[in-house]
Image 1 (cartoon, rainbow, N blue to C red):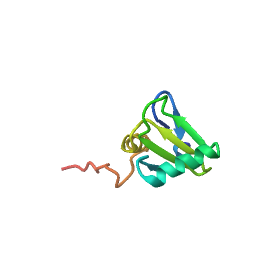
Image 2 (cartoon, rainbow, N blue to C red):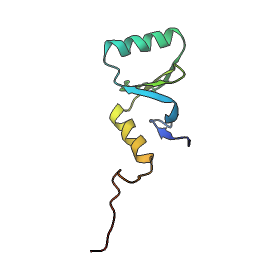
Image 3 (tube, rainbow, N blue to C red):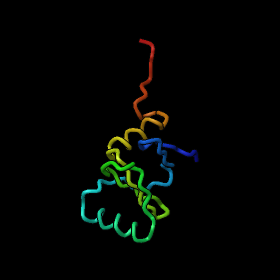
Length: 95
C-alpha cells in the first residue's frame, strides 16, 4: 500500500490513507465531534485562522479542520490516484 499525500491548503499535507471521513462542519453532530475533540486535545486545526469548511476524521480519532471544501479535497485526492481500466481510460483501437 502506497502513501497518498494530499495538500489541504496553507502548506499543510495529510496522509489520506489514515482518513476515514470528510464532512461539512455545519451539522450539529460535526460541531459536537469538534468540541469533544477539543476537550480531548485531538483537534488538529489546519485552517490558519480561516473559516472551517471541512472536517476530516482520522482512524486514530483525531479531528482535522481544513479551510478547503470537502469537494476540493476529494477532487485533489482523485487527481493523485492513477487511472486504471474502467476509470476514464479508453481503449484506442485501430479503426
